[in-house]
Length: 282
Length: 318
Figure 1 (cartoon, rainbow over the protein chains, first blue to last red):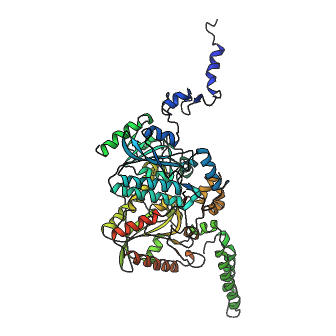
Figure 2 (cartoon, rainbow over the protein chains, first blue to last red; figure 1 turned 90 degrees about the vertical axis):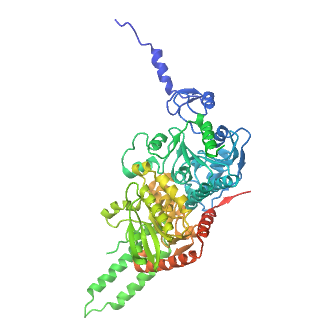
Figure 3 (cartoon, each protein chain N blue to C red; figure 1 turned 135 degrees about the horizontal axis):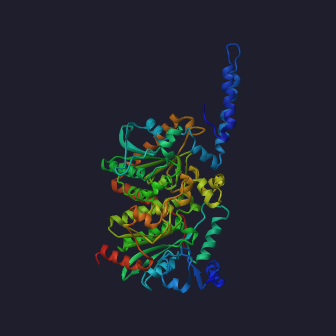
């Protein structure tokens, strides 16, 4: 005789995890698969309250988290990309720009401006991965360079939050040159003794990593962000080996000496404030 | 026996005919006039083919297995060359050669990517794809050149920086980034020549110069046509289309006005057809630009280089 029988309803409730989640109110964490109330994630800086997974966020949201309310003054908001090569893959670059501007409501993949962080004047540049993969063409390179030059002019520390697939292919050689242009500007900032903090968020790869994003006086990463030069797929295809566990994640880079620290999004503002006050002796 | 690319086949056939006729020539049978006729035809065909190459064909020419590499140019342009090794941190990277030499008697520093000719050499040189230690060696040597007030010549010919596990662990991105920043501050003349493949960040990491030249059949782009095709077309075999879209030839890059200063003409059919002539022409260009730059003060060189890259912008602003 069987003493206990598994109730059918019990197994059914386990299977519920695979049920489609209605968008807007509840969401499923990409990492732990838990179903969570959207508002709860938002309240928690877009970080999963169960597993600490950092959801990707837009540039405007990031600025709200870092810069004191009402102090942000945007620079170069009207700068737009130009299809000077008449580049066409499955779609014309011209069309891609138009579609991205419409979708994002912003001019390109980075937003720059001046503002205050805990009352300390800073210049900040924030990438938006949703705008053509955060790719760097002329506009991104020029905005970043002007942000650095603004730091030079006003003696304010420069913060760059990267999230980018790298150089923008549609602008070919000129995208590549933005790496040299931005890095050269950083040389001047360094010579002037003004702090530059690079914050690497998921994902930061290619030409952005191989220029300003790795040149911070401090390089700070968000937890578990993908950070690398070549993308994991390219590496796997080149060396025909599977990649080690956690390869190119923030924790891996910390272990290999490429970033100074990993800071959770909820603590980012506090940490930056503490660091900048020491570096600026204020 | 020369190696011919697909589009060179008609020329190859004529060359074969000519050598056959030469073989059959004896004291009794004279093919001289036929040979001359074929030679003229070959010359005409060459002109026609090479002036109508597609961007993909030019990419293949830039990668030609017989194209002169950095060490070939060094041998023909410089004297007193000695190579130095190692980044003083990890190891020596044979994909990037560094050393000192003289050009027309003037002491200087020479740096360049190096590819191999045969399989063993290719593996040894890692197909011209440097690891971080290569870029760190290059920076160490450039800073030595600055210490001794020597102008720097760099030769770019790489598919790109090596994408491997070790390269990532040792900071490929950081090594390239640091070179970009530090090259911007060098107080001596830096003259860059793209001799073959200018492949992305791996090329740029030794290419922040006061002058940047491209050989006539070299290419320079943000990504290889194959890589671009794999990402944008989801099909790595669409390289020919991607090459067209990337506008990567010397003429394309020159038309942007800000990126390069000169196109160095190559012998008909490419540098590998006559490496001696190619090197002699390049030497004239290098000396011309060196003499111009020797007029600058150290601060003037830094400023000129900064403004050169600062101007590389194509945007719209209201």
